[in-house]
Image (cartoon, rainbow, N blue to C red; front, side):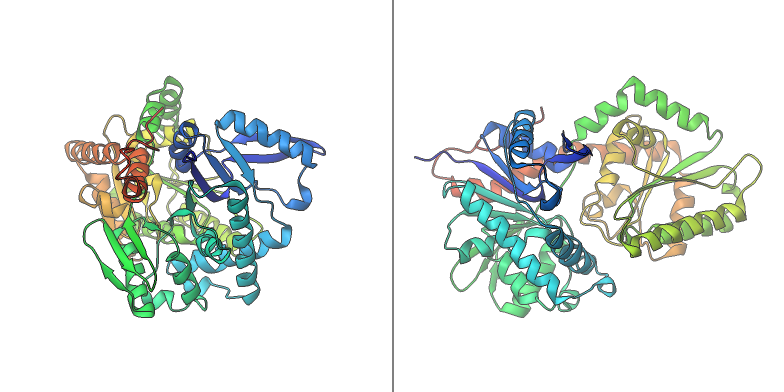
Length: 492
């Protein structure tokens, strides 16, 4: 009997392959919640991760050196790594094109940002077929193939086209749009058909699952049954399970990091440099879905409407560089910086500047220090699959002394809404009122809210997310084998 393995497929491998100088290459272990959660599963089961190594095929080191680097990565991660090499043209049309100029804005309800170039669709098909071929070459029928995110929607269907039988699960990390938005996609039927080739399709929230089911019913007419966490869709020849599985963070990792002496000292220095005021924190990747200009305008309105806040509050807005070579993103950066300059120019007083703007990546310790010391977090994306920054902030508030203002359009709102100040990021007046409410909130109420938030996130952590997905998918298949502990991850 063949050994059952977990095989993870994502756009990127869990390592970073970088050229330091001509002919000199290094690798670093990847970070992030997905790598953190899935690595124990893959190590325990002698698993495999398939993905793009992050460098154009034309620029990769010689084959022998590449294999040496991948072997080093395997030793460091504890599981096998198999690269899918992509050319410069494939990266431009599949990744920057179809994935990030069509699916990304469309799935975030911003279809006006879409560029429906037919050439993107062809390359997206070709690259998904290339990933599927890697699955065929490196896996067996006994393996469990877990595919991640919008870059690889077609992979399951490509396996079926190749006549290959695999146990397949799929998780979408971004939102799924409602029918009226999804209809804008020229390839809507192909995308739905491809998703229905998986055995289990997972979404972040009940709303995303409901949107997907609504599209399936309206466009394909399939019957949907089941209540609770899992629904069943009966296609013309198979059953597909559909569920909502909100992703989370490694709570223990962030809470422990916040308790470190180095982090505590950095947190103290941050506040000491901005004395006598409450700090409001915004942390975002440079992206138009994050609603940073909307947030800045709401903060400006709060200062105008509530003059008692002036001199007593500072917004620390961290923007992590992203896709600087894309004109739309460079334009967004300029807009943000212009707004910061205008607001600071309007309200700055001697000894007080309203906004502290940081445009760079922060180290983990520095980021957690900001989480720990800032009294208020202002997390207001226009749309987000989950938004883990909100959960990281709460996990890092080891003194239970923070207030979370959260967009109702972030997936995290479905879990945290009872103990946050929920806002519509398009409602400038509503966000301004929430900022003032957080500013004037008593310490007792802050502590009660944050204690409950941290308890929720601690209970629903990244490991429970993996376990719930696997329970719905793999345990069902193994129900007669008494192998219920197979693949179950646990914190290290």
